[in-house]
Length: 121
Image 1 (spheres, rainbow, N blue to C red):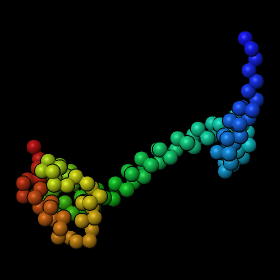
Image 2 (spheres, rainbow, N blue to C red; image 1 turned 45 degrees about the vertical axis):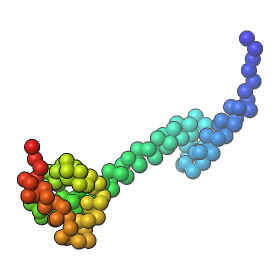
Image 3 (cartoon, rainbow, N blue to C red; image 1 turned 180 degrees about the vertical axis):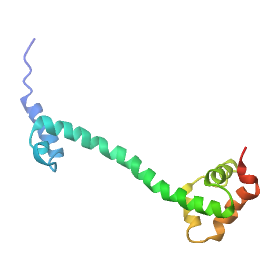
Image 4 (tube, one colour; image 1 turned 90 degrees about the vertical axis):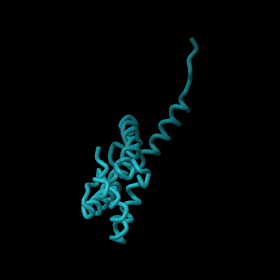
């Protein structure tokens, strides 16, 4: 079998990886083997953190709609279940935006849920 000389390709891969690790501290930006591990970990973080960011945004929306639903006499889960069954509105962000500025409007929407017994069953 013939010998494959791949010095340039190997150097190019290492150089590109070291560029990705350029802002890291200590050996994480200087030593090739350690920087490879850190780059792999760093590239996995954005996907995880995007999902975490979505969860963090959704939490106050649910709290706001829950407060409006409690004023109407139902729980958040029952009101959302009823609204989705009747295909009125299933977007929690929109419900939260309606609940904050005008206190009357979510009660009219969630009043459907309250008058129907919360949509349970």
